[in-house]
Length: 113
Length: 111
Image 1 (cartoon, rainbow over the protein chains, first blue to last red):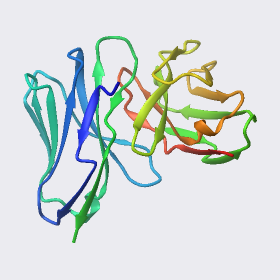
Image 2 (cartoon, chains in turn blue, green; image 1 turned 180 degrees about the horizontal axis):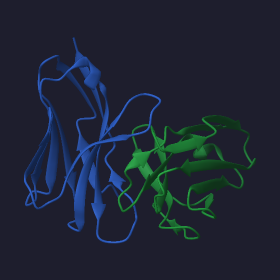
Image 3 (cartoon, chains in turn orange, red; image 1 turned 60 degrees about the vertical axis):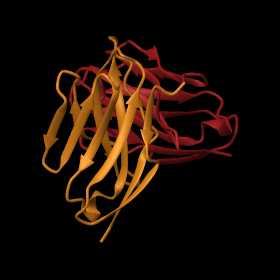
Image 4 (spheres, rainbow over the protein chains, first blue to last red; image 1 turned 135 degrees about the vertical axis):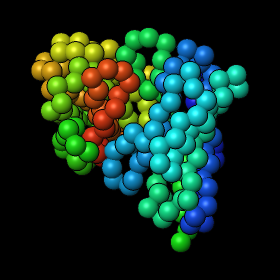
């Protein structure tokens, strides 16, 4: 049972364009929604995160949009650069306890020069 | 990644062999986690610990055991390795949930 669904599986964007990755969740107890960036041979690195009391969070070129009623959230990468080429994972956590994160299956992003 | 060190980085085992993966963190974090990453599957939680001497099962615990005898170390054991356990294993730590800092992984192949 996959509780966080991520799309698309892969994405190609031209340099300078906007990259958009979407996630949907099922568990309404989730209360923390982070995005991770992973380069080949490395572990995931926390990129940006949001809690459901806000609808948008921006850090530099990265923005999370959150729609609580639709149970969806998305990552927008503005002015995408070749260095942004990586695999991106959305995740969700919550409901008490310390049971870690539920991850989406990942999006392989390629930024073409 | 700074603060979380995993050893070994690579390992090849034969079916039925046993081994232990070590995770060490120097940030005095209470929470530590073990995940496995398989192609197209994202990361799945194997076991976690909320403090020294404590462990709990995650989403895919079967075939694995863990121990946290010291706060800074979290060990993942495979008693009898199976080909289905071929994966990349990631350890993570945080002061509070959810996990914040990941290591660079252990790539394990079981023949």
